[in-house]
Length: 289
Image (cartoon, rainbow, N blue to C red):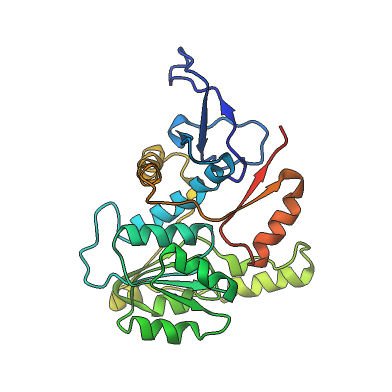
């Protein structure tokens, strides 16, 4: 999902008629590091003239993930009827977080509370549309979150994993939904998987919160998770999401996150940058061919 769009030959579904050459962008779900890959037409869209190739490559994975998360949270395609519309978005200056923030604003949710891990990301989060930004490197995350929305949050979007999941659940409002789509803090912090790193990861897995069905019922809360990579059989779902995203893009209501473009030869450095937590927006790998 990180390679730039290239020229494609697009065929009709019966393979009988070859269409004109066109520049497209889309999502692969798997295999994005391949030199050639077959992608269903429903996962591709024409590249708008005013969007650069590297920018377009950064859009599908993060935007589709963000919109499906908002679908699970009950905020799209029909607007929520809940009185509490407060949302909290972890890592709001990252790829998915930046899309979640913009989409939450488009769907009239609020207050939109974004969480960042570094002070350097605060201004970027504000530009995306956050009503409040919590810098957890200098502020007590949950104390500030409680001050902003004392009644809790209708939706919390969390890809951190073990470091925040339990607290995220506890700060949901009644009927609130915790949407999980990643486990960043469960992953190794170095490129070398030493025995210590394996032990560290195992310890984190043991400390993952457990959500009892009876507690969920009594608390009137929900925990939902997904992985967009496994949607290969859900073509109609992906098509619906992509259509909405393209509508927002074509009307300039949705903007691509900050893009850091690197050459495919720098793939190691790209993964190191992702793991460091210092990146803002999306990293895109380009090729020379």
